[in-house]
Amino acid sequence: MECGELIKQYLLSLLAVFRKKIRGKKYTLSQILILTAIPDQGMDMTSLAEKIGVDNSTATRLIDGMVRIGLIQKGKSPDDKRITIISLTEKGEIASEEIETKLDIIGEDIFKHVPIEQKEEIKEALLTFHWSLLKYKNSV
Image 1: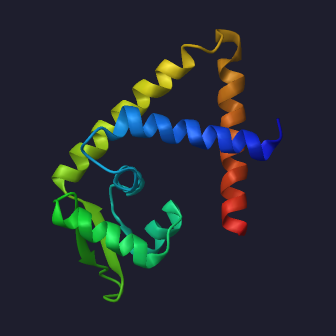
Image 2: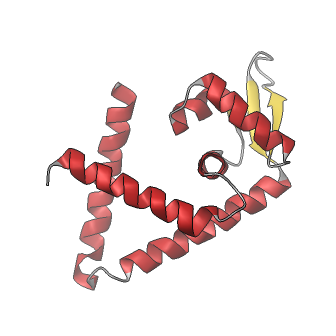
């Protein structure tokens, strides 16, 4: 199997897992990605858009919807009032923690099927792949 095909298969499988095991009926896949992407100290809208791979207008639309349901709050940067900083509300933090817990459980469940002698090797390969993916993403 070629690398492109393998990446596509991983993506499809991961999306299916996210939809079935994490999303439930509470949040959309986009909302889940945003909830898990925003650090504790918040971040600016442009950085979020880049991190989740959407344009600024799409990120704004998604964030506005999440503000309406109380998951995210908007504020202005103290350094530059033109920059909008987004952060999780208390409700958003709870949702993010629930998602992270589910992700940890899923990761443990998946790794139960990996022979013990291969676990560290696979983790190292996944870290290397992620590093390469980030490098590629930043070069495009």
